[in-house]
Length: 138
Image 1: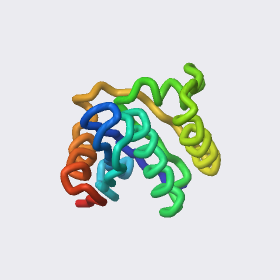
Image 2: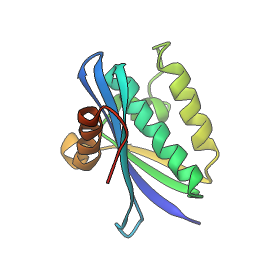
Image 3: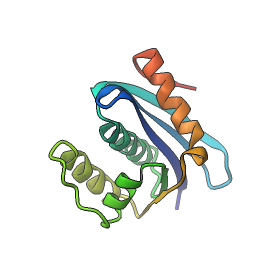
Image 4: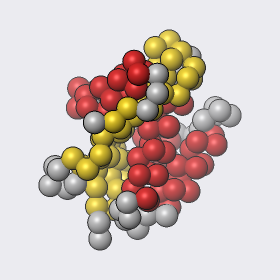
């Protein structure tokens, strides 16, 4: 089984405003496997958070990772993905459903919440993508 940890974050300068996501993927041993982000245009912060999750899931599926742990500082998204909160926003519902479908393709998927200071790399990548106004990778 190939496993990885993905740190994801969304950033929005204004809500809605210029938005982007950042993703840092590491092996269980801490080796960085990928670090990237992308500009989303004018979106809400929650939209950007889900976009980061979707990008991490897409990366995992493309790289044949079958055990993915996602780490996010978005309490709303984590609780929605874990079934503790309903998705009330009609704009977030399609993103949520796509994320659940992609997560279902993995053998094992977990998502957990951390405080913002424990997710600085993904936040930095998201902000770099806003500054670049396009895709960003390291």
